[in-house]
Length: 115
Length: 113
Image 1 (cartoon, rainbow over the protein chains, first blue to last red):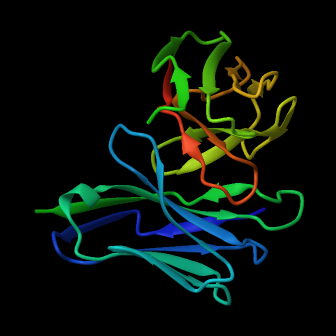
Image 2: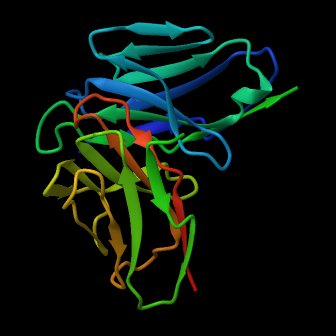
Image 3: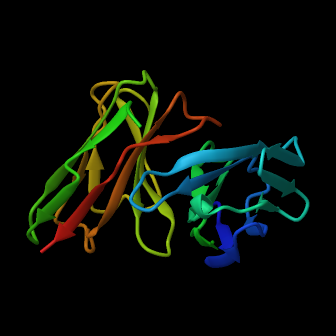
């Protein structure tokens, strides 16, 4: 089945700096890659996603890039703010086989933005 | 934050007891999911249901059971066969099973005493 590895597990930045979180996946048939943000004590919420026919997607201060050949995708947050502090999860959806459509999450990255 | 609810928020159980976690959604979503969240391990899929009266095992189904008799409801039973049940459990739903945003409930924290 699919295996998603996420790095780093913790990330600490100063307000205004950029933050990058990287994920790799194992199943070349995976074709949908969402990112979820979970603030302390709250439920995960989708912040951005990308499909395999697109190399990059941007939404204000956040962007996601996808390299299908290398099987990795990254989340980029620019001009970080304290409210960006949260746990971020990447995920991959398998595009074939017996696990078609199944979402597999990475282990999560704890992002802390210091004022 | 409305639309998908879980109850109770906190649950305590003695070893050897079965316990059922509730998950209800009024979003008219076909697909529903149960995840377990442990520190440093992300979200792991327990069971999922693509449509009412149908469900499949996820990655860590042993010791758990589910039912999907109604579109709105997807209860999870943690049985005594689950060796390490203390965890945070999240329910989610999506319009359908493929490529759609999953909406999560607030979670239930289960502690085995």
